[in-house]
Length: 275
Image 1 (cartoon, helix red, strand yellow):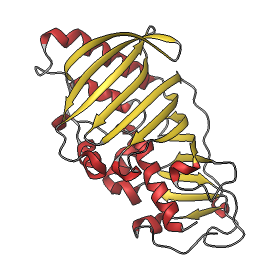
Image 2: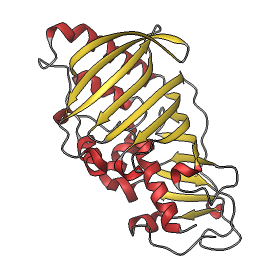
Image 3: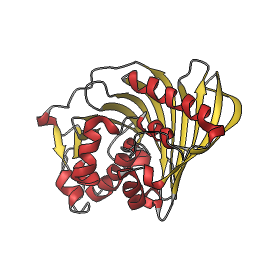
């Protein structure tokens, strides 16, 4: 396993955890929302606000983009954003190109205080010798501005729902079953100029010249989001919300058991061999 290969996988994982949920611009629905869609926008806005108030959620997420070769990268775990953004999730090692670093095929990933940690099997030699965790500061991939926005709590899984406040062309598709619950399916588009920094971020990872974000959201019979699907150019993200208000303590791994790969990522993943 080359360190550079692990670096490529970590880069993909960073995008997965950010999803299509960066900070948005604007302050109100405004006149761009068609009069016939105002009630639908209000329903989606309420679902967004209620989800955000919960402070945590158990989610399943997949992201597809050119950097992943068009293959979905998946994760499943718990996000917490009540006291700063944190996360613990399980991801298939093959999605991260880290299958040589774990025996059971699964990587545990944590996000704590602006840094990502990836649990691996301790290696007998190489750059990760004896370490059980790899660390990458979010700023290494997202830049200082992007990392600052994320640390401010703007990239939790419900943040993508906030863009719906500025949606246009909202339609009610119908009622469907999501995770065993009845849910109403809505479809909407959000103009690029309402996406703030998200437009630049996702343009850089494959969004290309997209002019809008296309969103589908399913709201269950309790008024909470059950599923969110968003596409921006060649980048897409799908999130399933399995429960809310499930916060847990997510600790920072011990420093003496952690290999910091931040500089490796900044330098393009060049490094020595591992294994």
